[in-house]
Amino acid sequence: MKWNSIRTKVLAALLGCLILGLSGILALMHYSFERNSFALASDSVAGAQKLFTILETREISKMTAASEVLIANPQIRDAFAAKDRTHLLELTAPLYPKLKAEGITNWMFHTSEPEMVVFLRLHNSPKFGDVLNRHIDKEVVRTHAIVTGNELAKAGFAVRILRPFNDSHGNVTGYVEFGEELGQFIHTMRDQTGNEYGLLLNKKYVDRQFWADSSKVWKRRDNWDDNPNFVVADQTTDSANIFRFAGDLSILPNQGNVLERFQSGDSVFVRGIFPVHNAEGKTVGAMFVVRDISSFYLSMRRTQRTLVILSVASLVLGTILILMLLNRLVFRRLERIIVVATRVVGGDYRSEIPVSSTDEVGQFECLFEQFRQVFVDVVSQASSVQEPEMQEK
Amino acid sequence: MSQLHDMKLRIEAKIQADGLDAVAVKGKIGLRTGKLLAFIKPDTPDTPEQVVKLKAAAKEILNLSL
Image (cartoon, rainbow over all chains, first blue to last red; front, side, top):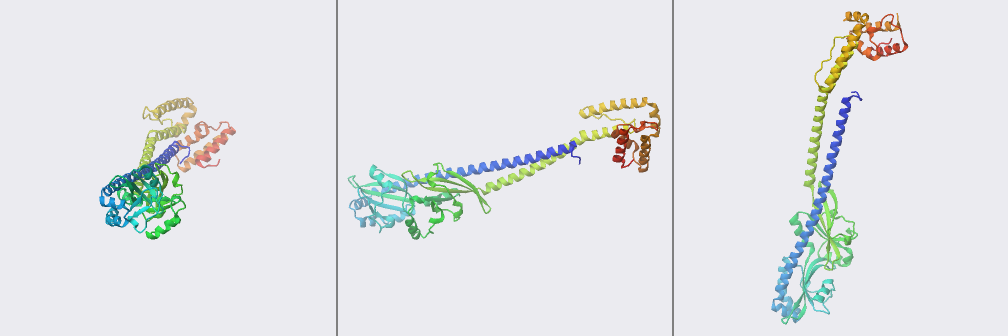
């Protein structure tokens, strides 16, 4: 192969096109995949946040309805007004398992201000008389209206409603509170979306000793030391390594963040995180969302492979076709001109160049044939030379 | 006899000995040297430039050292 031939140059140009084309396709596919996986992660974060809000609203409505029914019960109302703990417990204890089965894990009665101590704790009846002094406690005292929101207690994070409890004359005799652990939301969310979730709590708002004690009570592993800034309150998967997050939960943007894409075994995941606020508006925790995009990734890889094969095949076929056309339309005709020109110079004055077309090479053939005729005529004039040579033929 | 003519005869002898296409080979040599071999006669004057070119062409095309 001659490196300076047109054939080689055309082949090199086509190969260059092939490599550029393939690189372009691969880069485009990669870019498209990155964008799509980011979009999927964004969609997962936004969807999870929306679903979380819907669940929160639904559960608040449920607890509000339960509290309405409770307040309307004259026996319970009177027992609480009389501060008869034993009777109140007798009346409400049978209801607690039913409410718990519906997700209401916390149920408390509080005395009215200024003391506002826990009068009865249905989920832990031996414990009472303590003062909680949370944001929602202050708010309900200030407004004497229903207060809702997430409240991080020493050991857990729950969505709560707290409302005044009135006697038959409409006087505030205390407050009733219902709460649902937010951790149980993520299991519902997983059932609905198929994604994995984790509820993270900022360590700044969780008491270390209480976390250790509650871990014993709930028979869960004390995971306090797993992460430097947060503790995983609940998660839908046993795989702890997918909840990696090195940032500060308290500065997460309200709309959440898309974190990186990562591979675990044969599966590909995208991660996102959004903040969870308490009733005061502080970011006390966050929800981690992990979406499995393996099927999308595999589909992308299949498309990429097919595109590469199709591109290579079409470019190879195109190269062959172009070379065949060039060979037929240019190279063979040029070679014929060279052969005739060489033979004429060698003394075969009868060789003619056939003009095969009116295209560019055909015009050159025509011109060269005219030149050959002039050349033969000039040589013929030198008869002293021509005769012996023609005899040699 | 000129050196050029002598070289021409040796080229023709080589072509004949190897059974080559005389017209094609002479044509190639003519194009390389810029001179028709048919125009080289015994009395053609030698020029150093023509001699060098013919030697080079014979070596390249016929592998013939003149």
